[in-house]
Amino acid sequence: MTCESICIRIRFALPGVEHCRINLKMQIFTVVYLLGLSLALQNVHCFFVDTAAHPKENSTKRKHKSDDGPVVVKIELGQSLNTISPHFVGVNIDSDTVRYHWQTLDFSSQKLQNLARALSPSYLRMGGTSADGMNYFMGNATAAGTQVFNAGHHVAKPPFNITADQWVYLNEFLRTVSWDFIFDLNALKRNADGSWDPDNARQLLQFSADRNYTIAGFELGNEFDIYRSEYDVTVAPAQLAQDVMTLQKLLTEFPKYKSSFIIGPETAYFAPEYFQAFLAAGGYKAVHAASFHHYYLMTDEERNLQHFTDIDMMDTMKAHLDEVFAEVRSVDPQLPVWLSETSSANNGGLAGLSDAFVAGFLWLDKLGVCAVKGVETVMRQAFYGRDYSLVDGDLNPNPDFWLTVLYKRIVRGAVFNATGRHDVRVYAACANTDNFKAGSLVVYMLNPNNYSVTFDLPQFQSQSRLVYSLTPGDSNGLISKFVSLNGVKLELVNDELPDLKPESAPPGVVTMDPYSYIFVVFPEAKISICLH
Ligand SMILES: *[C@@H]1O[C@H](CO)[C@@H](O)[C@H](O)[C@H]1NC(C)=O
Ligand SMILES: *[C@@H]1O[C@H](CO)[C@@H](O)[C@H](O)[C@H]1NC(C)=O
Ligand SMILES: *[C@@H]1O[C@H](CO)[C@@H](O)[C@H](O)[C@H]1NC(C)=O
Ligand SMILES: *[C@@H]1O[C@H](CO)[C@@H](O)[C@H](O)[C@H]1NC(C)=O
Ligand SMILES: *[C@@H]1O[C@H](CO)[C@@H](O)[C@H](O)[C@H]1NC(C)=O
Ligand SMILES: *[C@@H]1O[C@H](CO)[C@@H](O)[C@H](O)[C@H]1NC(C)=O
Image (cartoon, rainbow, N blue to C red):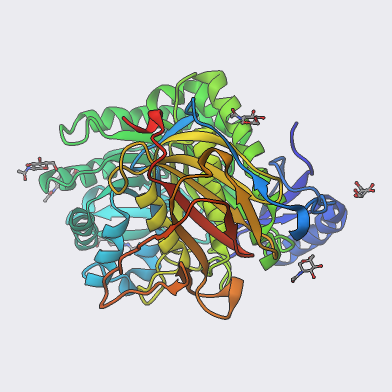
């Protein structure tokens, strides 16, 4: 086991409280306390042990400080580790949005469309817990099927309708902004024998095919590994694999969707048993990619400013992905891996942090690690909705929106192995040839420290470069609601994005401000792997 601490995870069936993880030393107290609480309130649904990688309790003290001299960066340019595709970074809009936030999400807003278009090409996944309570009423209320949930229990998220108008509105928006849709179908429509009932999904597909809506991919259900606590329903992994095959068959009924892909099993965490059992039961043959969700900050102890720049926290992702790949590879040597729902803090994020400049550290590092490890697609929770969104409730961009746009514009193609030093992060890849000449390299780096750091890149010492340096957009520092690019605060101008121009810099070392991240493009690098 690579886990560093075993935690007990308690989920409450209380709206708004999703994942509570409590340390080992709290276990006995917690179990006793919660047993009492559950008797008193009847809202504790399950307990389970989490063995996911978790930073050490006794976190390693920083080995480095400001006077340690330059970080020497070495990049292995002869060999590419993986490839970043134009669709590497995608976004989510939670199915909850249809239920709770539909009124405020104005798809007809020119501003919103401009923001969305800036991220294109991109997948938009609509999924989440509410996907499993969503009925499709496409002008025909007779065939919604049986929604399975235990009505005797407190159900946090009862079933609701998406109407034809809402579906049309959403699909027309996606068409307008050229996003590629991935839709999470309700897996809790079930027949008496426990198998998935595809009738309501069929209605939705027929309605969509009639309007020629392109749907790139589908999922069936959400976070099956923790269904019990949301809906008091269990769907065994082997059953889910069967259901996904039923979905695969359903898609063949529609010429428009017969080549759409399916991803799964969409587990809440990388839940080793569920994941493995799903794949082994034949799920791997039915899905284009094995998919799971990930959040760094889940316990009260973790959900604070300090952990947003914590290198040990960032390191957990590497171990986590190694485990995921080991499992997927044990079943299928080729199957892609997708991180289909992910953000810094779970449960809606953390107001003032996951929507602030500081959120960029865990986000950019996650993109870097995923690219190195070979994750095919990473979908940010969320484009819109709650505190981890790229776009806020007034449809204004948060700092991570700008970071995501820059990443998509700058980074694309082969990924290289870059090494630096333990207190910083360094990643390298081909620069996007849509915006830079073929052969260009980008090195992107994070300095999550309160001291400035100088980087020495001996391989590019004598080359000029284009720099995109990102720092807090105002005097609020890490918790700034804004980000500056090369010292200029980024804001929309008449609802349009400004030019996101780099600064030309002479050859030499690269010095990074405390708490900053940077993209450095070498247009003259002529890296042979980046030439074609
Ligand atoms: C915590 O770290 C210190 C310093 O490295 C070490 O001396 C100590 O033994 C560690 N404690 C535990 C419980 O691991
Ligand atoms: C409504 O659904 C039922 C059952 O699938 C079907 O027989 C009927 O033709 C549908 N009606 C309309 C108006 O689409
Ligand atoms: C969904 O729509 C149907 C048909 O209009 C209606 O009978 C049903 O009550 C609605 N359900 C909810 C939860 O609104
Ligand atoms: C339907 O969509 C496809 C692909 O998006 C497009 O090529 C085709 O022309 C469309 N057909 C109609 C009838 O609009
Ligand atoms: C990257 O380079 C480092 C240092 O040379 C090495 O330890 C590591 O295994 C390499 N990683 C990959 C994925 O090749
Ligand atoms: C940087 O952080 C260290 C350790 O947290 C602290 O001791 C030091 O005073 C800080 N330096 C600055 C310039 O804030």
